[in-house]
Length: 358
Image 1 (spheres, rainbow, N blue to C red):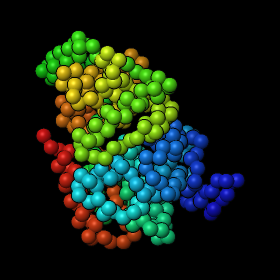
Image 2 (cartoon, rainbow, N blue to C red):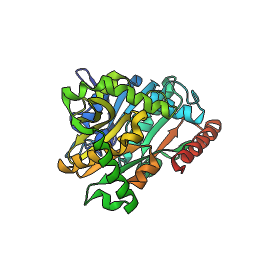
Image 3 (cartoon, rainbow, N blue to C red):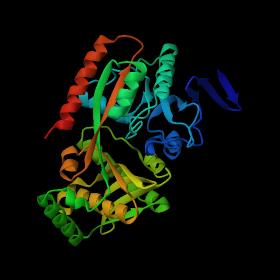
């Protein structure tokens, strides 16, 4: 059934509804399917979207519906980075349909309601049937989400270990979780970085926006180091700082910005999504270690109970006591695609080897 409310269009089916506007309230699993994040992401244009919609569970629960965005995308620097890394640039057609942005650390953290997966899959297949897209990509699912999607709509043509993200529950002293060797190394690095004049401060609002021009080249240097395209421009970094709870951890020496994390406080959880450092002074100043541990101190002092630390730097994060969570991508097409399935299996091998590399 289709229902029009002024300029809002909704399609309601058993267990789910489809609309072109984000509901006012959502039962969010994490930052990335919250109203605050999704509303701000609408205005960030780093991904070129030609069509978008929101799937919602229906009826809604007491906190609102569970929501999943569906995007038709002609350009995504983040996904393009994966294509470059595995040598499959352009292999998935253009446009592509994504159930959740590849920029989001999770499309959903944990389980995915079956009705939501069914609605997203059905809608995506309709878009493919009537448009130019060839595949639906469901990025950044946890193990539970993968199981729910497959139980709801069947096996995909490809399943890829896309990333591994890391988190830490703030119980007790974090350094007690790492080896005595790491403890000594961290204390030495923090002491020396302080002696060399490095400070880490948290900024919000206009103070954070004022640092974006300095922060942007550091984020580009991080992408260049990993042979990826630049994932953000200055406008998108400003857009991130408009997410409710946004903040910036800034490492400075003599007034010069040498490292930055972009973070988001939501309830008793803080998520650090992206950032960058000046690699020329990284070892001398221990910039990354200082940002990580001073941000942890700030989180503890401000009542946070969990820190989401994001992707990459896998072995470093493991040595420092963080808990890893595998993030998967499922790729669906309207019919069998043995040629593409073979390439997706290769993509899985390349990315898995990268994630597991010593």
